[in-house]
Image 1: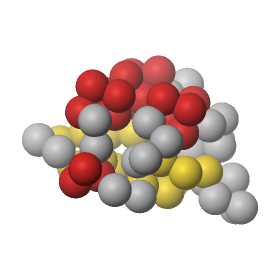
Image 2 (image 1 turned 90 degrees about the vertical axis):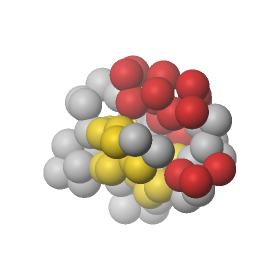
Image 3 (image 1 turned 135 degrees about the vertical axis):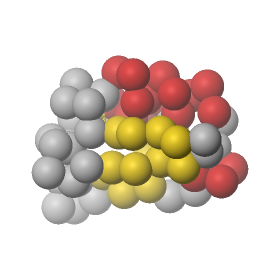
Image 4 (image 1 turned 180 degrees about the horizontal axis):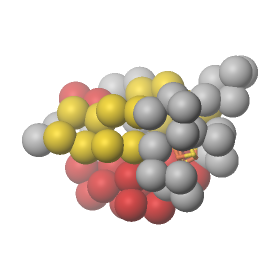
Amino acid sequence: MRVEVDRDLCVGSGTCELLAPDVFEVGGDGVVRVLQPGQADEGAVRDAAAQCPTGALGLAD
Ligand code: SF4
C-alpha cells in the first residue's frame, strides 16, 4: 500500500499519528510525515486516512 500526503491540506491535527503511530508522525513544521508505509497495519492506515479531518491522506494499493 502506498500512502500519499497532500502537505497543503494537512493541518497537523495528529489524528493519523494517534491511529497509526508507526506510520505517521507530525513534524515540528506541523505537517505529517510518513514513516514506514511498507510495514503498516493496513487497517489502522485506512482508518487514519478515513478520519483525517481535511482529507489529506490518500491510499493506493
Ligand atoms: S489526520 Fe490529516 S490533518 Fe491530521 S496530521 Fe494526519 S494528515 Fe494531517
